[in-house]
Image 1: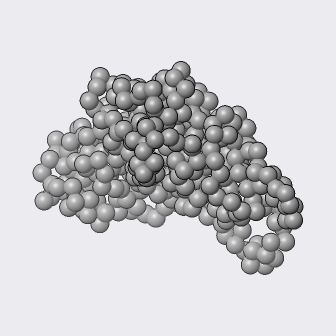
Image 2: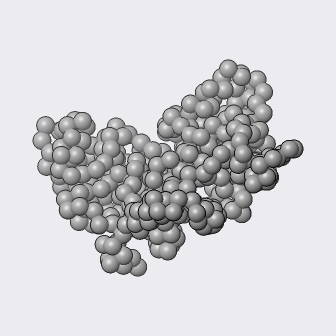
Image 3: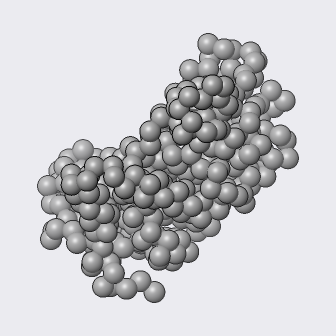
Length: 380
Protein backbone atom coordinates (compact mmCIF):
# COMPACT_ATOMS: atom_id res chain seq x y z
CA UNK A 1 0.00 0.00 0.00
CA UNK A 2 1.27 3.46 -0.91
CA UNK A 3 2.12 5.79 1.94
CA UNK A 4 0.39 9.18 1.81
CA UNK A 5 3.42 10.64 3.55
CA UNK A 6 5.72 9.30 0.82
CA UNK A 7 3.58 10.80 -1.95
CA UNK A 8 3.27 14.15 -0.16
CA UNK A 9 7.03 14.29 0.33
CA UNK A 10 8.04 13.19 -3.16
CA UNK A 11 5.46 15.16 -5.17
CA UNK A 12 5.00 18.57 -3.50
CA UNK A 13 3.31 20.10 -6.52
CA UNK A 14 1.85 23.61 -6.31
CA UNK A 15 -1.73 24.01 -5.19
CA UNK A 16 -4.19 24.01 -8.07
CA UNK A 17 -1.95 22.02 -10.42
CA UNK A 18 -3.68 18.97 -11.92
CA UNK A 19 -0.81 17.13 -13.59
CA UNK A 20 -2.09 14.55 -16.10
CA UNK A 21 0.66 14.53 -18.70
CA UNK A 22 3.10 11.77 -17.73
CA UNK A 23 2.86 10.33 -21.25
CA UNK A 24 4.68 13.51 -22.38
CA UNK A 25 7.02 14.88 -19.70
CA UNK A 26 6.78 14.05 -15.99
CA UNK A 27 7.54 16.18 -12.94
CA UNK A 28 10.55 14.98 -10.99
CA UNK A 29 10.21 13.50 -7.53
CA UNK A 30 11.55 15.64 -4.70
CA UNK A 31 14.50 13.29 -4.17
CA UNK A 32 15.55 13.82 -7.79
CA UNK A 33 15.43 17.59 -7.44
CA UNK A 34 17.53 17.35 -4.29
CA UNK A 35 20.04 15.03 -5.95
CA UNK A 36 20.51 17.46 -8.84
CA UNK A 37 21.09 20.31 -6.36
CA UNK A 38 23.59 18.18 -4.45
CA UNK A 39 25.42 17.18 -7.62
CA UNK A 40 25.53 20.79 -8.84
CA UNK A 41 26.89 21.96 -5.50
CA UNK A 42 29.56 19.27 -5.61
CA UNK A 43 30.60 20.34 -9.10
CA UNK A 44 30.70 23.97 -8.03
CA UNK A 45 32.91 23.30 -5.01
CA UNK A 46 35.24 20.45 -6.01
CA UNK A 47 34.64 19.77 -9.71
CA UNK A 48 35.29 16.17 -10.75
CA UNK A 49 37.49 15.27 -7.78
CA UNK A 50 35.10 12.41 -6.91
CA UNK A 51 34.70 11.19 -10.49
CA UNK A 52 35.05 7.56 -9.43
CA UNK A 53 31.89 8.02 -7.36
CA UNK A 54 30.16 9.28 -10.48
CA UNK A 55 31.24 6.15 -12.32
CA UNK A 56 29.80 4.01 -9.52
CA UNK A 57 26.50 5.89 -9.89
CA UNK A 58 26.56 5.13 -13.63
CA UNK A 59 27.05 1.43 -12.83
CA UNK A 60 24.20 1.60 -10.32
CA UNK A 61 21.87 3.11 -12.93
CA UNK A 62 22.63 0.31 -15.39
CA UNK A 63 21.72 -2.21 -12.70
CA UNK A 64 18.51 -0.33 -11.87
CA UNK A 65 17.50 -0.35 -15.53
CA UNK A 66 18.38 -4.04 -15.78
CA UNK A 67 15.98 -4.74 -12.90
CA UNK A 68 13.31 -2.48 -14.34
CA UNK A 69 13.09 -4.36 -17.65
CA UNK A 70 14.42 -7.78 -16.50
CA UNK A 71 17.41 -7.71 -18.85
CA UNK A 72 19.74 -10.72 -18.53
CA UNK A 73 22.66 -8.50 -17.49
CA UNK A 74 23.64 -4.88 -16.93
CA UNK A 75 25.94 -5.19 -19.94
CA UNK A 76 22.81 -5.39 -22.10
CA UNK A 77 21.98 -1.78 -21.16
CA UNK A 78 23.27 1.22 -23.09
CA UNK A 79 22.71 4.78 -21.88
CA UNK A 80 21.65 6.85 -24.87
CA UNK A 81 20.39 10.38 -25.49
CA UNK A 82 16.84 9.35 -26.37
CA UNK A 83 14.55 6.81 -28.02
CA UNK A 84 15.19 8.23 -31.49
CA UNK A 85 18.92 7.65 -31.15
CA UNK A 86 18.37 4.04 -30.08
CA UNK A 87 15.97 3.36 -32.95
CA UNK A 88 18.45 4.92 -35.37
CA UNK A 89 21.18 2.60 -34.07
CA UNK A 90 19.00 -0.32 -35.12
CA UNK A 91 17.91 1.16 -38.44
CA UNK A 92 21.42 2.18 -39.47
CA UNK A 93 23.20 -0.82 -37.96
CA UNK A 94 21.43 -3.83 -39.48
CA UNK A 95 22.77 -5.28 -42.76
CA UNK A 96 19.79 -4.55 -45.02
CA UNK A 97 19.36 -5.90 -48.53
CA UNK A 98 17.18 -4.48 -51.26
CA UNK A 99 13.80 -6.23 -51.06
CA UNK A 100 13.80 -6.55 -47.28
CA UNK A 101 10.81 -5.19 -45.40
CA UNK A 102 9.95 -3.93 -41.94
CA UNK A 103 6.51 -4.34 -40.38
CA UNK A 104 5.07 -1.70 -38.09
CA UNK A 105 1.77 0.13 -37.54
CA UNK A 106 0.26 3.34 -38.89
CA UNK A 107 -0.08 4.77 -35.36
CA UNK A 108 3.58 5.08 -34.40
CA UNK A 109 5.23 8.20 -33.03
CA UNK A 110 7.62 9.66 -35.66
CA UNK A 111 10.62 8.31 -33.73
CA UNK A 112 9.48 4.79 -34.65
CA UNK A 113 8.66 5.64 -38.25
CA UNK A 114 11.19 8.07 -39.71
CA UNK A 115 14.32 5.89 -39.18
CA UNK A 116 12.65 3.04 -41.07
CA UNK A 117 11.35 5.29 -43.84
CA UNK A 118 14.90 6.55 -44.34
CA UNK A 119 15.84 3.02 -45.46
CA UNK A 120 13.72 3.32 -48.62
CA UNK A 121 16.88 4.54 -50.40
CA UNK A 122 18.33 1.08 -49.74
CA UNK A 123 15.30 -0.64 -51.22
CA UNK A 124 13.80 -1.53 -47.83
CA UNK A 125 10.01 -1.30 -47.53
CA UNK A 126 8.18 -0.11 -44.43
CA UNK A 127 4.81 -1.87 -44.12
CA UNK A 128 2.41 -0.05 -41.81
CA UNK A 129 -0.46 -2.19 -40.57
CA UNK A 130 -3.81 -0.67 -39.61
CA UNK A 131 -4.33 -1.92 -36.07
CA UNK A 132 -8.11 -1.64 -36.35
CA UNK A 133 -8.71 -3.65 -39.53
CA UNK A 134 -8.45 -7.26 -38.39
CA UNK A 135 -9.99 -9.22 -35.52
CA UNK A 136 -6.98 -8.19 -33.43
CA UNK A 137 -4.22 -5.61 -33.72
CA UNK A 138 -1.64 -8.37 -33.46
CA UNK A 139 -3.18 -10.21 -36.43
CA UNK A 140 -3.02 -6.98 -38.44
CA UNK A 141 0.73 -6.99 -37.93
CA UNK A 142 1.18 -10.70 -38.54
CA UNK A 143 -0.53 -10.65 -41.91
CA UNK A 144 2.03 -8.13 -43.21
CA UNK A 145 4.95 -10.44 -42.40
CA UNK A 146 6.45 -12.55 -45.18
CA UNK A 147 9.72 -14.31 -45.98
CA UNK A 148 11.52 -10.97 -46.58
CA UNK A 149 10.51 -9.40 -43.27
CA UNK A 150 13.69 -8.69 -41.31
CA UNK A 151 12.20 -6.81 -38.37
CA UNK A 152 8.90 -6.01 -36.69
CA UNK A 153 8.93 -2.75 -34.73
CA UNK A 154 6.05 -1.55 -32.60
CA UNK A 155 5.26 0.67 -29.62
CA UNK A 156 4.16 -1.35 -26.62
CA UNK A 157 1.53 1.36 -26.05
CA UNK A 158 0.45 3.82 -28.71
CA UNK A 159 1.24 7.38 -27.70
CA UNK A 160 -1.92 9.03 -29.05
CA UNK A 161 -4.62 6.52 -28.19
CA UNK A 162 -3.15 4.61 -25.27
CA UNK A 163 -3.80 1.39 -27.16
CA UNK A 164 -1.74 -1.41 -25.59
CA UNK A 165 -0.61 -4.38 -27.64
CA UNK A 166 0.08 -7.89 -26.49
CA UNK A 167 3.83 -7.71 -27.00
CA UNK A 168 4.39 -11.17 -25.54
CA UNK A 169 2.24 -12.60 -28.32
CA UNK A 170 4.00 -10.51 -30.95
CA UNK A 171 7.43 -11.43 -29.59
CA UNK A 172 6.58 -15.13 -29.63
CA UNK A 173 5.42 -14.81 -33.24
CA UNK A 174 8.68 -13.10 -34.26
CA UNK A 175 10.82 -15.54 -32.30
CA UNK A 176 9.25 -18.53 -34.04
CA UNK A 177 9.87 -16.98 -37.47
CA UNK A 178 13.36 -15.60 -36.86
CA UNK A 179 12.11 -12.03 -37.33
CA UNK A 180 13.85 -9.41 -35.19
CA UNK A 181 11.55 -7.75 -32.65
CA UNK A 182 12.01 -4.09 -31.69
CA UNK A 183 9.87 -2.47 -28.97
CA UNK A 184 9.51 1.26 -28.42
CA UNK A 185 8.65 0.94 -24.73
CA UNK A 186 8.57 4.61 -23.80
CA UNK A 187 4.90 4.50 -22.73
CA UNK A 188 5.43 1.33 -20.65
CA UNK A 189 8.68 1.48 -18.71
CA UNK A 190 8.11 3.11 -15.35
CA UNK A 191 4.33 2.73 -15.49
CA UNK A 192 3.82 -0.98 -16.18
CA UNK A 193 5.85 -4.10 -15.64
CA UNK A 194 7.95 -4.67 -18.75
CA UNK A 195 10.03 -7.79 -19.33
CA UNK A 196 12.36 -7.94 -22.33
CA UNK A 197 12.91 -11.66 -21.88
CA UNK A 198 9.24 -12.57 -21.59
CA UNK A 199 8.44 -10.76 -24.83
CA UNK A 200 11.54 -12.01 -26.72
CA UNK A 201 12.63 -8.45 -27.43
CA UNK A 202 15.78 -8.15 -29.52
CA UNK A 203 15.79 -4.37 -29.06
CA UNK A 204 13.90 -2.15 -26.62
CA UNK A 205 14.27 1.52 -25.87
CA UNK A 206 12.73 4.38 -23.89
CA UNK A 207 13.43 7.91 -22.72
CA UNK A 208 13.63 8.59 -19.01
CA UNK A 209 11.49 11.73 -18.95
CA UNK A 210 8.04 10.16 -19.15
CA UNK A 211 6.86 7.43 -16.77
CA UNK A 212 10.36 6.92 -15.34
CA UNK A 213 10.08 10.42 -13.82
CA UNK A 214 13.55 11.47 -14.97
CA UNK A 215 15.02 14.32 -17.02
CA UNK A 216 15.04 14.70 -20.78
CA UNK A 217 18.25 13.79 -22.58
CA UNK A 218 18.87 10.30 -21.17
CA UNK A 219 17.32 7.01 -22.22
CA UNK A 220 17.81 3.27 -22.12
CA UNK A 221 18.67 1.05 -25.09
CA UNK A 222 18.44 -2.72 -24.55
CA UNK A 223 19.92 -5.20 -27.00
CA UNK A 224 19.88 -8.96 -26.58
CA UNK A 225 23.36 -10.51 -26.95
CA UNK A 226 22.30 -12.26 -30.17
CA UNK A 227 20.83 -9.18 -31.78
CA UNK A 228 23.57 -6.84 -30.57
CA UNK A 229 26.15 -8.65 -32.66
CA UNK A 230 24.04 -8.08 -35.78
CA UNK A 231 24.36 -4.31 -35.47
CA UNK A 232 27.25 -2.49 -37.09
CA UNK A 233 28.53 0.31 -34.87
CA UNK A 234 27.73 3.67 -36.47
CA UNK A 235 29.26 6.10 -33.95
CA UNK A 236 32.85 6.01 -32.80
CA UNK A 237 34.78 7.59 -29.95
CA UNK A 238 36.90 6.97 -26.89
CA UNK A 239 34.13 5.43 -24.75
CA UNK A 240 32.84 2.66 -27.03
CA UNK A 241 36.01 0.58 -27.06
CA UNK A 242 36.87 -2.42 -24.91
CA UNK A 243 39.41 -0.55 -22.75
CA UNK A 244 38.31 3.10 -22.72
CA UNK A 245 40.86 4.12 -20.09
CA UNK A 246 43.76 3.08 -22.29
CA UNK A 247 44.04 6.37 -24.12
CA UNK A 248 46.85 5.19 -26.37
CA UNK A 249 44.51 2.41 -27.59
CA UNK A 250 46.64 1.20 -30.46
CA UNK A 251 45.17 -1.15 -31.52
CA UNK A 252 41.61 -0.96 -30.15
CA UNK A 253 38.51 -3.12 -30.34
CA UNK A 254 34.80 -2.41 -30.00
CA UNK A 255 33.33 -3.06 -26.54
CA UNK A 256 31.77 -6.51 -26.23
CA UNK A 257 28.70 -5.26 -24.36
CA UNK A 258 26.18 -2.50 -25.01
CA UNK A 259 28.68 0.21 -24.12
CA UNK A 260 29.64 -0.02 -27.80
CA UNK A 261 26.66 2.30 -28.45
CA UNK A 262 28.04 5.02 -26.14
CA UNK A 263 30.66 6.72 -28.25
CA UNK A 264 31.70 9.47 -25.82
CA UNK A 265 31.32 10.83 -22.30
CA UNK A 266 28.09 9.94 -20.56
CA UNK A 267 25.50 12.40 -19.25
CA UNK A 268 26.55 12.36 -15.60
CA UNK A 269 23.98 14.95 -14.49
CA UNK A 270 21.19 12.95 -16.15
CA UNK A 271 22.57 9.71 -14.70
CA UNK A 272 22.39 11.03 -11.13
CA UNK A 273 18.88 12.36 -11.71
CA UNK A 274 17.43 9.27 -13.41
CA UNK A 275 19.00 6.95 -10.85
CA UNK A 276 17.31 8.92 -8.09
CA UNK A 277 13.92 8.73 -9.83
CA UNK A 278 14.25 5.01 -10.45
CA UNK A 279 15.15 4.45 -6.82
CA UNK A 280 11.64 5.64 -5.95
CA UNK A 281 9.94 3.36 -8.49
CA UNK A 282 11.98 0.35 -7.40
CA UNK A 283 11.41 1.15 -3.74
CA UNK A 284 7.65 1.13 -4.30
CA UNK A 285 7.83 -1.85 -6.66
CA UNK A 286 6.66 -1.97 -10.27
CA UNK A 287 3.81 -4.32 -9.40
CA UNK A 288 2.41 -1.68 -7.05
CA UNK A 289 3.12 1.16 -9.48
CA UNK A 290 1.30 -0.66 -12.29
CA UNK A 291 -1.70 -1.47 -10.10
CA UNK A 292 -2.13 2.20 -9.19
CA UNK A 293 -1.60 3.42 -12.77
CA UNK A 294 -4.27 1.04 -14.05
CA UNK A 295 -6.60 1.91 -11.18
CA UNK A 296 -6.26 5.61 -11.97
CA UNK A 297 -6.88 5.00 -15.66
CA UNK A 298 -10.01 3.01 -14.84
CA UNK A 299 -11.23 5.71 -12.47
CA UNK A 300 -10.80 8.27 -15.23
CA UNK A 301 -12.80 6.16 -17.66
CA UNK A 302 -15.60 5.73 -15.12
CA UNK A 303 -15.66 9.45 -14.37
CA UNK A 304 -15.73 10.38 -18.05
CA UNK A 305 -18.53 7.93 -18.82
CA UNK A 306 -20.55 9.36 -15.94
CA UNK A 307 -20.51 12.81 -17.57
CA UNK A 308 -23.16 13.09 -20.34
CA UNK A 309 -21.21 15.88 -22.09
CA UNK A 310 -18.03 13.84 -22.42
CA UNK A 311 -17.27 10.96 -24.78
CA UNK A 312 -14.61 8.36 -24.03
CA UNK A 313 -12.40 7.56 -27.02
CA UNK A 314 -9.96 5.13 -25.39
CA UNK A 315 -10.79 1.46 -25.85
CA UNK A 316 -12.09 -0.35 -22.77
CA UNK A 317 -10.33 -3.71 -23.25
CA UNK A 318 -9.86 -4.87 -19.64
CA UNK A 319 -6.90 -7.11 -20.45
CA UNK A 320 -4.59 -4.54 -22.02
CA UNK A 321 -5.02 -1.31 -20.09
CA UNK A 322 -2.46 1.50 -20.18
CA UNK A 323 -2.07 4.72 -18.25
CA UNK A 324 -3.40 6.81 -21.15
CA UNK A 325 -7.04 7.88 -21.40
CA UNK A 326 -8.39 9.92 -24.32
CA UNK A 327 -11.79 11.63 -24.51
CA UNK A 328 -13.59 14.57 -26.09
CA UNK A 329 -16.45 16.93 -25.33
CA UNK A 330 -19.68 16.42 -27.25
CA UNK A 331 -20.28 20.16 -27.72
CA UNK A 332 -16.87 21.84 -27.39
CA UNK A 333 -14.09 21.36 -29.94
CA UNK A 334 -10.78 19.91 -28.82
CA UNK A 335 -8.63 23.05 -29.05
CA UNK A 336 -10.93 25.31 -26.98
CA UNK A 337 -11.39 22.48 -24.48
CA UNK A 338 -7.63 22.05 -24.21
CA UNK A 339 -7.13 25.77 -23.62
CA UNK A 340 -9.92 25.79 -21.02
CA UNK A 341 -8.26 22.95 -19.13
CA UNK A 342 -4.84 24.55 -19.41
CA UNK A 343 -6.09 27.87 -18.03
CA UNK A 344 -7.56 26.03 -15.07
CA UNK A 345 -4.37 24.24 -14.08
CA UNK A 346 -4.81 20.93 -15.93
CA UNK A 347 -1.60 19.77 -17.62
CA UNK A 348 -2.60 17.40 -20.43
CA UNK A 349 -2.18 16.97 -24.19
CA UNK A 350 -4.09 17.15 -27.47
CA UNK A 351 -3.70 13.64 -28.86
CA UNK A 352 -5.64 10.84 -30.49
CA UNK A 353 -8.55 12.95 -31.69
CA UNK A 354 -9.25 14.37 -28.25
CA UNK A 355 -7.76 15.26 -24.89
CA UNK A 356 -5.19 12.86 -23.48
CA UNK A 357 -4.98 12.41 -19.71
CA UNK A 358 -2.10 10.30 -18.36
CA UNK A 359 -1.99 10.04 -14.55
CA UNK A 360 0.83 8.24 -12.74
CA UNK A 361 0.71 6.03 -9.66
CA UNK A 362 0.77 8.95 -7.22
CA UNK A 363 -2.06 10.94 -8.85
CA UNK A 364 -4.91 11.44 -6.39
CA UNK A 365 -8.56 10.65 -7.02
CA UNK A 366 -9.32 14.27 -6.18
CA UNK A 367 -7.10 15.38 -9.08
CA UNK A 368 -8.93 13.05 -11.46
CA UNK A 369 -12.36 14.22 -10.29
CA UNK A 370 -11.49 17.91 -10.57
CA UNK A 371 -10.00 17.52 -14.04
CA UNK A 372 -13.00 15.62 -15.41
CA UNK A 373 -15.39 18.12 -13.81
CA UNK A 374 -13.51 21.00 -15.44
CA UNK A 375 -13.73 19.26 -18.80
CA UNK A 376 -17.45 18.59 -18.43
CA UNK A 377 -18.25 22.21 -17.48
CA UNK A 378 -16.39 23.73 -20.45
CA UNK A 379 -18.47 25.79 -22.84
CA UNK A 380 -17.96 26.50 -26.50
